[in-house]
Length: 254
Image (cartoon, rainbow, N blue to C red; front, side):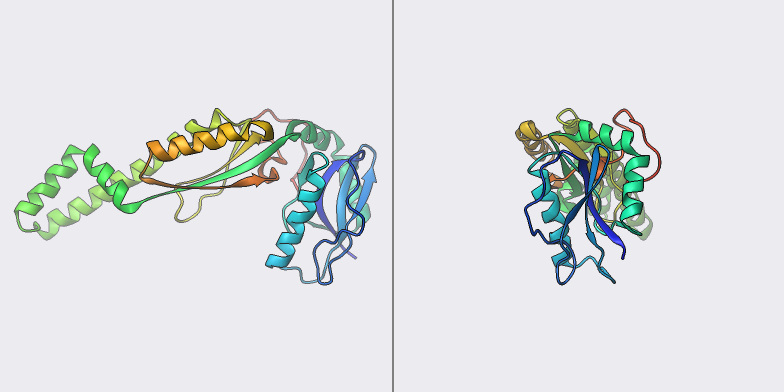
């Protein structure tokens, strides 16, 4: 039977509440595998597991319960090993790395920030910032809309200006928030978002980070800024470019 892995923690971490269930229907009992100074929170892996809401919530609940008693390195939903021995083997092989990550991430949470443009607001902004755009738009207006070529030129210029503004806003967003974070992880590009960035934040000073987000919203009203968190630090199980690397070897998943 394959082994489903929820997270990795220290062997001395307080045990989970007795009888806690994890993924699957019926829910598979969560148990602890220990290997030296480390432990993995696991259960049997159901066959044909899919990211259904019930199982996603079960995965998150295990991490939330365990995280209340100390630092846990969260594995992403669907992390499955061939068996228990494979899990303890990875714990032994990567012990230095996981111990370093547990020390680094202790007391920290993740906030994911996604941002996109508010269409009318960003158009107003790029027009106000670009005299050439305003002049061409006014010339077209006075010419009753302008020729096909001039309208095409204006459209191309507007698209280029908005794309440039997207790049600038992504940089400004990161710069505005990274001062309140211990580390930053840039997520994959996604259609519809000009920024998808995760920030590692000290739990005890999270209010400073959230206040920085609100200041950014006020100073950039042309941005739609969405925040998700606090989350387990999924994006920081491996050290990223914005933080020093510990001892690593291989991927993040057990």
